[in-house]
Image 1: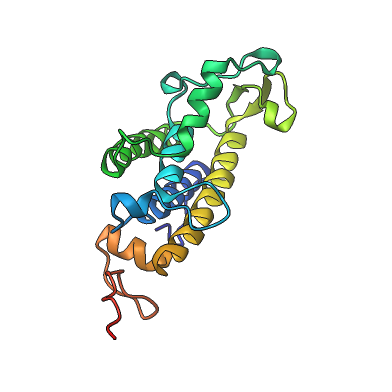
Image 2: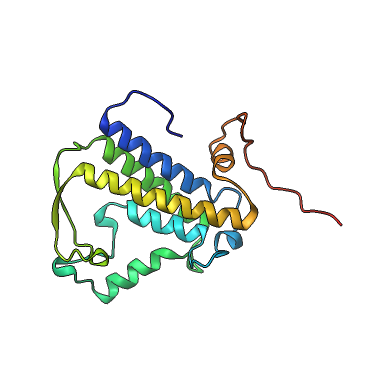
Length: 196
């Protein structure tokens, strides 16, 4: 949880990225394998799928099978690898997916902390936005974009989890991180089923 502080720019980026990743991870707290695969909204995404996809998004470029070439070209294999990031396969478990997510979370936050936000980088093509060629951008662009994307995924996970069992992000974060109750929320715990 990123609380008010006087930080430099790069620390702010790292903390906001980590806050979104903390919320995403907590969205799976207490779920069974079956619940992690539920798609209770009109979206095809599940909590497990969002965590798996986010883990892909924050992975180092060398860890990604799906790459876009200059001109916006993406091979069938790369497209299939990318589309595979949106759902847990039968041979994948939530625990394994979270373990990969946790490793990548530490790595991406450390990478941000060690970066110069003014340094230039080459951003790969993004044909889904109509950007068919690489572009030059400052690192702060990527950090802001990470926050944008991760906040979108965390919000989506909040909605899915609410539909599964009514759990809210704050109570899940408190439970997942072992933090105490606040005047506004208790750490999440499973509700007893109603009796007749």
